[in-house]
Image (cartoon, rainbow over all chains, first blue to last red; front, side):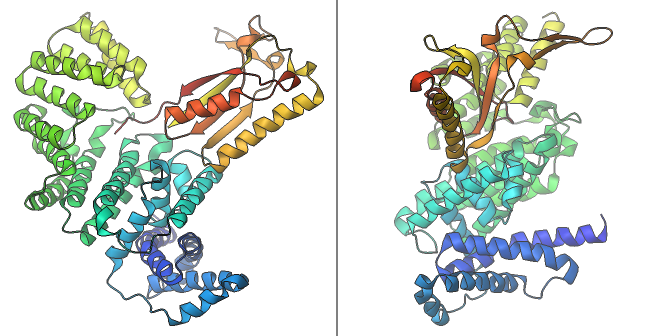
Length: 409
Length: 130
């Protein structure tokens, strides 16, 4: 990396850290979320242009707040109807330091309002809290910048209409809002994790961004074990990223992955965080999913996997967060722990709830293959390949089916 | 999730003459409808791309051969089945894609009567789920 490029990268990292803190300060001061967000974005663009050449200011957050506030003031001055506000500014206190994590969390809650669609909440969170530009977000989701710009603008309007004072949601709705916010962070993570090739490379950064934001949320909400549970789940899943695709970008199933490529440090950290959260005694679905991920991560070889433990964890997960996908995964665990026949029996129970879903066929194919029924597995792999809307999955399922027919099974 | 909404020549309800035989104001109304729909989808943050394709007379069928590729000119016997244009949208659900397809199917046609054009809705392949 050239020094100039390194300087630019340093500035970008710094800006992402600084963005939510600056935005929180400006929103608190001016009250107008949509305009404040624009002003901070503009200040960040100035910073990205100036800092690599002129050096990073001593107090980057303060610099952004000052520049964004100046823009806000200019805007307000230009609008005489808003003159009254200007007077209010003069007496309002400046935000104190040290509340960075709380500010970021408050912004996450603001951007993950339940009335926003997932795609809108994701885009708004990435821009307002993650400090990504509209162009970067558009590139990550492969839509034109204007379309993404409108999506973000609409989302901001929805947030503005809700007219919620800046800060954490009221206690009565805290649990529901937290669920929504964690759901959005997990979606951002998955958008990045699912990316595997070419134009999707920009997306892999989304996983890192989701992990960073969830880390901050955990600092601000240490009493909520599901926040740490989600962080552990992300770390324990992301640890397998390098092994998840081969050199050609094709999916590699868990039992065929080169486990030496797994990130041991991420697994250790995820395990440590999970243990801390579990000790708090309020087990939720993210902690259980993290525990399942950890059970896989701990096995040095695929055949060392403790399927009995995983089966038990899926049983608990079904109790906390029942759903057909959990049941489907439990069928796989059942097959691995107690044999393919037991798994197929459970699958038959689940199937009516997942009519026509490719995963049902993919799982049955896998279990039939384990049971030694080659032709049956071939039929089911082929059906799954026809029904999936995922290109890497379709390639994987097609290869799987082709291997069985070539093997003369 | 992204979807392609495909419009084909001919796939319309009843007996509608080709667009070149419509009244100019009907043609204009149809074009304006398509533009307005695109603007609406863009405003909602759902439009990825929308294009009309040049007519069947300019279409070519290409086939790999040992020497030079074999190229056949249009028009084709089944030009009704040829693609006339497409919209790529990025929406929350299949239901929303169907809603947009239905809206686009209602575009004004000959004598201002809704065209009720068949719209083929195809999901674009994406990364693996979860």
